[in-house]
Length: 454
Image 1 (cartoon, rainbow, N blue to C red):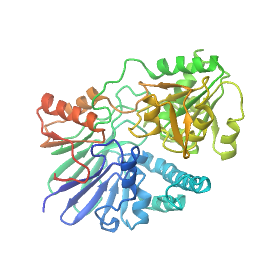
Image 2: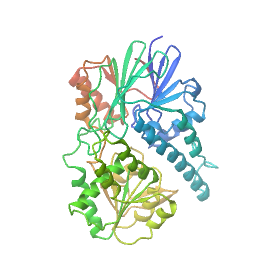
Image 3: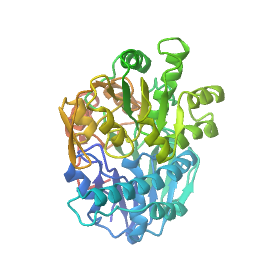
Image 4: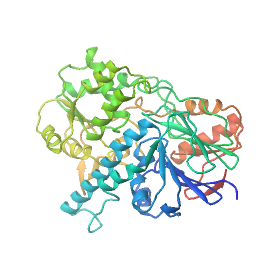
């Protein structure tokens, strides 16, 4: 029996990444992400996997973002007994992110039950904070460039992918096949992270395509963010910035610190980072010096850029503070978290602003705001959108189409097949066409649930 790959997520969509690799009765999962966005995608989170979790021997994480890791507590809850492998920084982030994910799900289920807006009675979380803490015992770390054996006879190696702390590409060797998973690739010019490392030779490549049909603008994050925040501050409004707690929150904080330092923003403009997960993540940068571009002094500059908000009481108190302010809160696509409460307070205020700091997956509230919707459904009711909505184009931590192609061109030899993954259909198919036309390689966008030989 040969090596096969089953696409259980991240196929035709930019979310829910899960790739099941099978060989001679052994199975491992590369990434174990939650689906986000459209309801039909989110419903997949509650569908059983086609393979019992107890029959999966190992899990390998390319990085810690919830769309790559957030299903793992449920996998363990439902019977996974193997080891999960990741880089040390990814381990540290998962210790922050997964319990937070469970906590948020419990909070949202409790709120839905209290307010009576859920169609399910009672509304139940996928997993709890306790479930998430239990799954962390399965994590084992390995440094980038060190070979390790996730299953008997299988060899794996991580290499730097940029993107966020700990993010890696993964080379898996099994049954005489070399399979390369790009993970999420960062930008060569990222303000926080080092560029992705050149890829090793592989027979089969799975390449992400989040920005497979787009190029990043020439404008940098400070050039976009500065005028927007100055505008809202001048009119006495509040800027609500939905941020991913890992990566985007820190990039925005660093930009705000530098904008204040050079006088583009008032030094006294209050800034709040209202996300326990983002607060803890910001502290981690100083623990992993050398794995990103920042010095220890720059890490401290980033931490001082905002008042760190962790408790619910502190979060509620922000709403009572009058005058201009900036609130950074998760989640980055407004799918959940404290940012929803801030949006209900400020969406209807024409002086205020919502700053969308990164990619907004179709079907999310962030995407609806970017599309110009005049109302937003939050907590079971419609909220009018009178606030100015600003979509930043320079804040992405993903490689754009040209940068993805440059990474692929750096492969020492042409792979036998390239799977284009982790992108919406238009982006994935645009990258597939470029690979076929410019590189002359066989490429395809796999369907969800499909199985292909490696």
